[in-house]
Image (tube, rainbow, N blue to C red; front, side, top):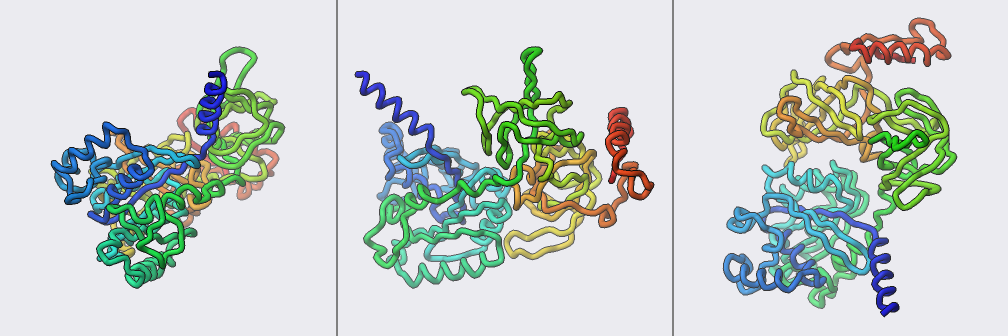
Amino acid sequence: MENQTLNIKEFLDKDEQKDLLRFLTAGSVDDGKSTLIGRLLFDSKKIYEDQLDALERDSKRMGNAGEHIDYALLLDGLKAEREQGITIDVAYRYFSTNNRKFIIADTPGHEQYTRNMITGGSTANAAIILVDARTGVITQTRRHTYLISLLGIKHVVLAVNKMDLVDFSEEVFNKIVNDYKDFVSTLNIPDITCIPLSALDGDNVVKKSDRTPWYSGKCLLDYLETVPIDLDRNYNDFRYPVQYVLRPNLDFRGFCGKVASGVIHVGDTVMALPSRKTSKVKSIVTYDGNLQEAFPPQCVTLTLEDEIDISRGEMLVKPDNLPIEDRNFEAMLVWMDEEPMDVNKQFYIKQTTNTTRARIDSIKYKVDVNTMEKSQVDKLSLNEIGRVVFTTGKELFFDPYHKNKQTGSFILIDPITNNTSAVGMIIDRVDVKDMVHEDALATINLKELGIDESHFEAINKVCMELTRQGIPVKLMK
């Protein structure tokens, strides 16, 4: 009995140490996304008996797969989805194998549900784009690939589905792969794998198929179990947005948060932004005990050797590796509100743990996600994407999104309805001279006034106090 208990404990410990892969599926309507995931769950023995009984019953009653079990019903749970045989909302499914845990986001293919796909893909490490072998690369394939590149997803599988309907033709597969790679060459996606499969029959989903002897690559599940995602995170630039100041008693003052990027060790020198005060890390505290180092995506509490005034929304970084500090920046914006953009409205912007006011300075262009054409517009509407310049009420600490997803992303919140109006991916800072509207903030430029930088700390204190009293002043070295 003791041995059995030990084995269960070993099993649970091993299960806890498995890494997690989040991936999304995207594709045109009826390309078989939900069927593929249902098949993946079914063939990897991740469906309970009562689910299987219900699936067989529902397949006879409302399935769209003829005599086959309709695996799509495992994911398309909304009544409207089942009636129309389509996916509308993002469906999340969890399963694990001996090597890895998975969270699948089954995202809708229709253009009017672009925001749902952006939501499902915002945390994904990989993406599976399905293509119908009969129709090949179509407009929606290009749109989904563009959205995936916009989200910075580095690993993409082109799953050429319904190969059984083209007699598993190698020529058809190669033509689709070549067409897709020609299109993707202009986008920044470093890792693309192409797999021929049949979701309905299970070919190359969990096991290699005998019907594709010409295909020498991995089956889909093998690929998902082995795709390397550890190096996708940024381990170079330490960024620690403070979420909460922990003060349980007189003897302890810690700063809670999630390590957004980089690695921190006990004894490392850190700088607090915006005050620019420095100290050394005294300890890294967790529920399970103290650590010597922390890395993303760990949630920890840092204590410092010196008493520094730090609160939520501020950031700890390393003095020799600072983020961009600015109020003006440009970003790719996906509009997610039913109400069209009002460029004269002030929004709340939430970036890392920092929340402040923001206004739209200008819209550089809108991108047509189907043709990739750019056009001049004066506003964005639901599901539209554009390159937009912003000004914020106070300086944000950010990195370009392609370099650091955690500090390069933000959401816009409507101050009246409290809806999430848009999500954005920061491209870079914008110089004041390139802004369309003049900056309303009073600015003190030490260089222009001939004041030595050694007085920066004292003048910065005055500026911060004025800002606290409702007179925002920007200080420039």
